[in-house]
Image (cartoon, rainbow, N blue to C red; front, top):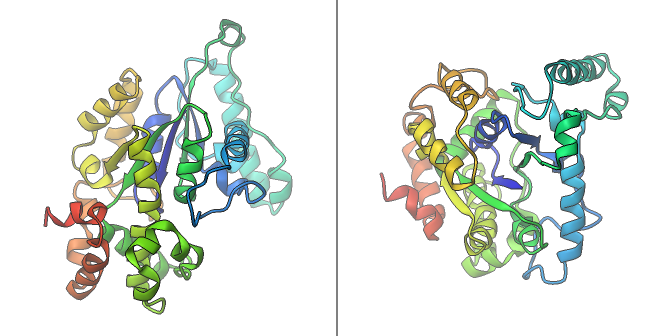
Length: 318
């Protein structure tokens, strides 16, 4: 299983869809939005999550089995070696049927419509398994528990420049498509927050500062565990500047052969800018914050993010 951990507005759907374009993968889009797992795990741990191994394994099994419309229905959809052409058409049709039922005002009915993988019978009989790829923007505080669960996970932490994250999030707030940043709450009780004495430094009334602290503390909660487990910590900004060779190398590191469908996806996604949630982005889009952010706000983000090396790495390049 490949698990991509990220903050929102950090390019994780684009990277996850690059994995999803591979003909031998099953991609699940944020299954922990559908199943929050609050019956098993807290979102943030105040101490190391010792004793939660069984709960984490159970929750991961639930996420892996999740085939909810929201989890499977994010386009574009790709051809798979384990699925026949008829299976592809049937599955895509089921997704659009479910979306139509949602738009008609019957979301609860659409939620009961599972979207199966529809693997070919000969593929199932062979005992082969496609590579499962899960992406989450809600699991940073649970990364350590997941990695202690005993399940085989190739973990990726995708980081965006903290100014890019703050700028993109606030742009969404202004557009009315992102909710206003919430207070940090339990995130201020985590080990990372305690180490940095964040509770005494946070000014929750300031959106820019609140988002900068969230970027720092949430990613810190995942980064140490992922690094110690041999996972990968990647910069979205670096990937976006020259995506194909870098994602090609990433596939190789994770044991996936390169595919033409991934090349085609990356080419299409670089063809120009789309809407706020679009996967399309022009060259240089990741650096747009440089011309859009007030220099005073950039400095406020810098002061917060540079309290740890995870943030300093981005500002050494400036």
